[in-house]
Amino acid sequence: MSMGSTSAHNEGVGRRNLIKRSAALGLLTIPTMSFLSACATGGGGTDKETKAPGGEKSEKNPLGVKQGAPLEAFIFKGGLGDQYAKDAEADYKATYGAEVKHTGTQQVGPKLTPRFAGGNPPDVIDNSGADHLNMNQLSTQGQLQDLTVLLDAASMDDPAKKVRDTIHPSTIEKGKHGDKFDVLYYAFTIYGTWYSQKLLDDKGWAYPKSLDEMVKLCGEIKKAGIAPWTYPGKYPYYVHFNLFAQIAKIGGMEKWIAIDNLEPNAWTSNDAVKEVVEHYEELAAKKYFLEGSQGLTHIQSQTAWNKGKAVFLPNGSWVENESAPTTPKDFGMAVGALFDGTGDKMPHGTLRGEPSEPYIVASKGKNPAGGMELLRIMLSKKHAQNFATKVKSLTCVMDATEGMALSPGLASASKVFGEAGDNLISLQLQEWYPALTDEKIGGLTGQLLTGELKAADWIKKTQAEADKVAKDDSVTKFKRSA
Image (cartoon, rainbow, N blue to C red; front, side, top):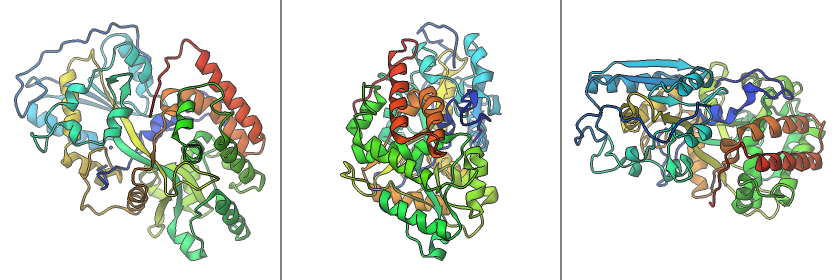
């Protein structure tokens, strides 16, 4: 993952959506109850989509890709690298006898914003990273190809099955702007509290089931001379991966959806918000965070964790691949479900798991059919398994990794995923309003974790920031009902 280098209180371009870059690195997958396989600001524009020259549609070419039509792919090269995309591009090149121009970068937005404005965007884009394109704005401008035709195309593995029947339904829901499906989230990420199973076993500690048990265990851990928690203080919104989902588990999705929808008093009238934020206030007051965490980047916090300086780390399932260079072989990387609180609306074992790694096709590109065809290739079992193998990550393709040997972190994620069943939490706030969550609320969270801000003030100020966005007509608003 690529992060910016802003400090906890100087929110700028770098923190403008870690989630995209994070979510970007997604991993895990979802059910039929089995594990799935590893899922800009442009200038003004009209809603008219460029009609690039098409080819003959056939069973093997349902999207009508023109033979020899060149393809340009812009792929975020972060924690997942970009080799998996190059492998899919090689199949496109072989099938259509076409040249593929590939760019791997961590500056998707800065490089492509002028190209969208100029009407010459690349065909397919992995829009991740700190400096990603603003998809809400691009969608509103009609710059994103409607991918419904891809969903209705025959899948690579079984022509009798449509692509939509091979991927998890949440992928389709997540990729909509209003009623238009124009973002394909290729991966599926499990968010949670990560730890070393070996360390817990060696010390005789058990992963806590509740917030109260976590506080008690933190006391034991601190007495043993280890910090209970660390986090990337340069990007404190990593903590939101857990904090937001914990609110949803305790208070219920109906109240969280009010938060996603920027409803008045959604933060201040939710008792779960008070309980969860006070929990973090207590962790800070008892100095249960590794000293100096407020100055760490994501990589530095992961390295400290790998070295045993801290027991717990809030993160997403991309962490196994990203922290691999410093992870001991016998580390036993594992992830735990959300903790129980008081009067929870969702049961024990509830997990935050949702589609991630957003791919878009430019409606005004030279070869939108080819861009969608590359995605169809990536959604084959062959390439879903290649993704899992190359980057220890899974995709939105259901059952693609069945029978594969999984690495420790993914095996653990698979286990808690299976135990969660249908009790999966998916949040939209960080996707829809990244400047709010990552810059504004992120700054408040950074102050909360260092003890500079009390829980009551965090809640009051967070509500005020949400209200500002709700009243800002320049920000496109979205609504969810479930």
